[in-house]
Image (cartoon, rainbow over all chains, first blue to last red):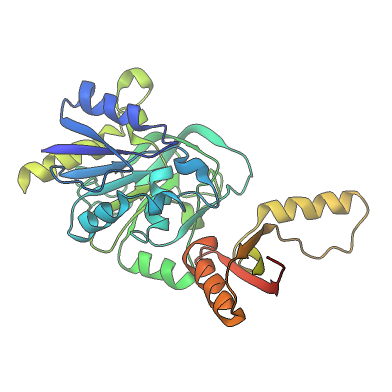
Length: 231
Length: 84
């Protein structure tokens, strides 16, 4: 089993993913450069945070046309597990693998701090070790994380149980104060209908060791290990 | 040759905090009649195309596929013939 970490020009969180995979989880992993055209040999893919292609035009808008993205889309359509965090989430939305879009934070300010997110639905390969209602402490670091989807899309996400994480208070209440960016319904992460593609604004790779303040993020990778083992 | 002048703005249903902030700044300056302010993008393209209808169709496709995100944005554009 090998995990692939995508790197675009301007990606900045790939080394954090690499550190967790290499030094904490000790899994087989490798980088995949955006100009590559194949993801053969990889069993799951991670799109890290950053500013791919400078976030020119819109976050993720140019990255979507990187040569590797055709292979990523095929991998996802075949049911392969794909996680996009932060800028990776924005890229997955622009690429049409996840519905909706991420807009400038309502505060107009970059937010870099710890948040709490509540697991709503846990039937993705990444979240299967979590239970609904479980609260994770995990950092965010973004200027454009305000999740938006038109009303009919939002209703479909709710109906299908595709809202995976919502920003909450430490004790799990969904309030405006707990919402760091003005996302609709406090949405922090969603999955596709098939549930193999997960996008979230928080950074699980930066919360995978006690030393760094939380290891809740590691649960998302642990879930994947368990999922792959059971397949 | 044609020049396309394209405006991309957030849809009316999408909150535009930047526009709201500028509106309140204008109010502070005394411009209290500004009922709404939306901030968008303005792009100018030059196309080596001789047929106006084809230029129109191309720009529309560019807007749909890349220049605007139809989930959150609307676009309008004008096309004018310019000297080579």
